[in-house]
Image 1 (spheres, rainbow over the protein chains, first blue to last red):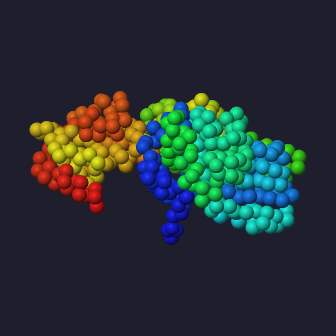
Image 2 (cartoon, each protein chain N blue to C red):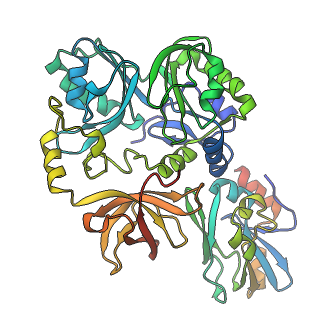
Image 3 (cartoon, one colour):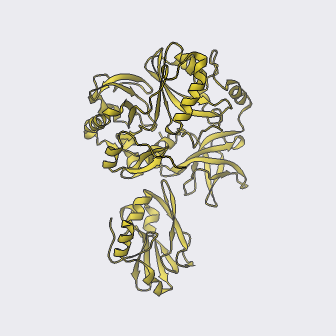
Length: 370
Length: 126
């Protein structure tokens, strides 16, 4: 069954800007404008703009908002103060991951959750299932606003400098993972955060769909002197992979534990954090997982691809590639994959089976680039 | 889209340039634009005689990998050193320095089965 593809509020603008459109997570999205390598470089050295309006947004409100989020996410929501953002994940009751997400705290009774496009319905239903226990009323205290907001990610070392012109709020000195509701490009109540999925810094801005054209125009005008360019999903993937960020559906999913995925740092076993699956994760942490998600770099020429087998020197399968690419910055093949624990130490020699050829590789630390 | 008049083309978007009993083989401007940034080209068939439509090697782009097929039967004489050093030539100069292999043709009449520039352009339009 093929469902009709959704489009974002920027679709016409993005197409006009030369975006080659492909289906992604149920949306028609630009995969590239000029070339993945060129766009990648723009973000690493200058400033680039992604239409990421496909992402989902939920509001969580009311006196029990924090309690509810604490239950459904693994990170400690009480570490957040107003104006801070936290990376977290939702466990699925079986030790796996419903989704990974960002949790924004604006006030003690006002939170904003940003989830993956492909999981919006699944996540919302999951939240609704657990809402009643905390007196959270869907539609009132828990609102799926995904269809109302469009979002641009403005990324790169020059991003904040370029965007400062568009607001009176002082954003240039905002540290990573902070958020504010500001007037941006003349648009009131824009949600502004110093977040992103590239590892090159920058910000993300969410406004109501009706302001899409106004936002795009202002962002490109403000960025003109820094040679701002539109960037597609192809470069988004190479940028995030070089930085070692997980992609839901590739590197993590309903069958992977945050502990084996190297997300122990967002799994906070602190007093009072009674999140779903805490016991399962504590047990896995104590016993040590049988496999671990690790980065690797190829020593032979080649490009690892998702689902390639990872083998030991004897040719026995010891894991599987979950994400792989040719690194535009380092010009080598690299990727991530689940590797049997005994082969997961940094520097261990492994082999990636790429179209029946065994390519030499080494377990490496992430991010791959600095 | 650039489609030189003096070349022959396949439905799989390879081109062939006849030089006596030899020919240069590459991929078209359209093919490179669809593949995206070429990361490297792998040809391990030098010295082998391959039949028309057999895979002579692969092109790895950042996002995808694609076989390259023999436009006509022949022996692989040379693998372009320039693209081994700089694979991006396949993107920037697909009909020039971005050629892939030189072959010695063994079935000259197979040339008649290839598309000319007009026919290839027409195929792209469809």
